[in-house]
Image 1 (cartoon, chains in turn cyan, yellow):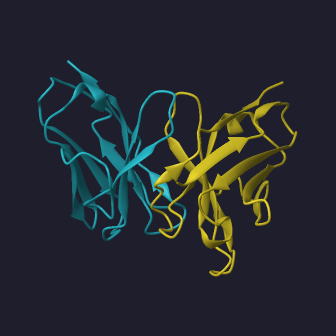
Image 2: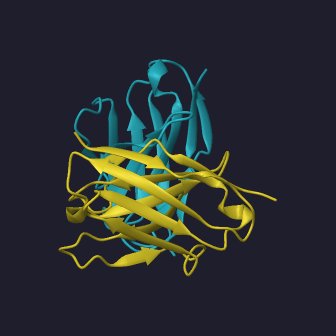
Length: 107
Length: 121
C-alpha cells in the first residue's frame, strides 16, 4: 500500500497568513493526488485535483504543487472560513489512501 | 446538479449485518465510478471500496479490512448504490460516505452527507 505522510498534523495561524501543508508519498504517484477540505460535521470537499488543478468554484487562494513523491498545499491568505481539516489522497494505486490530515486553526 | 443521499445507518451488534444506500440524482449511476469512504469518530478518512461504471465493466475493489465482508452493488433502475456490510466488527464503527466524480474516476467532487454506523454490544 502507498503510505501518505502529511505534515503538520495541526497548525495555528493568523488571518492573512500563508499556510503550507506537505504530503509525501511512499512511492512515486506522478500527479495522482487530490486535496480535500473537511469542516466539522460535514463531508469532505474537493479543492485540488491532479496535484495542482483548482476545482471549479474554489477560491484562488488555495493552490497545490508537486509531483512524484512530494506535494504541497498552500492557502495564500488564511481566512476565518478556512478553519477545517485538510487531507491529501493518492489515486495512483489501490487501495486509495489518505494522509492523516492537517487541522488548521486560527491563532 | 449531482446529489448523493445516504441512508441505512444505525446501531448493530458485532457479527451483525447492515445495508447502506446512496440515492443518486443529477446523473446516471451506471455511468459513474462510485466509492464508499468511511471515517471513524475523531479519525481520518479511509477508502472502503469502489465500483466501476457499467461501461468499464462494473469491477469492484475493496480495502483489505473489509474485503470478504462488504459488498458494493447498484440498482440502476433506482439510481441507487448499496453497501452490504456483513460480519460487522466494532472497528467498522464510522460515518460512511458515498462519493463520486461521475466521469472523473477517483476525483470525488460530490459526496453524500454520510450515514453513521455504530457496531457495539
